[in-house]
Image (cartoon, rainbow, N blue to C red; front, side, top):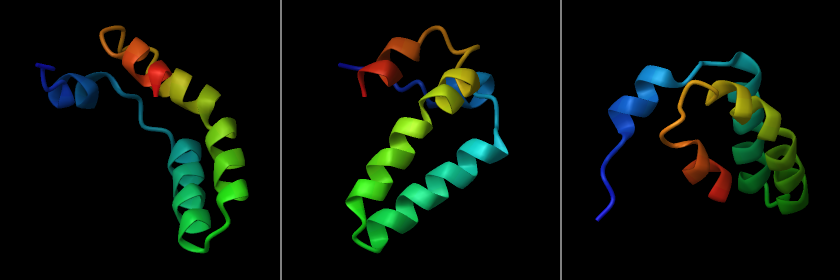
Amino acid sequence: MSKDKRDYIVGCFKNDDDLNSTLNRVMADYTEGDYHAAEEEWKASKTLFDTALSECAEVIDDFKAL
């Protein structure tokens, strides 16, 4: 069984306004049915996620697997 790592992630995750904006665009694209645009935004968010998770060594592989 997987251990809940929410508290760990909250503690190490670096908040990033650019990442938040990108995720908002992804959700808006999905809502509008523009799946291609959403997928492109997801791809563009990779480096932002890498930076935000740079202090989260315990879960970085889990996020990369997603």
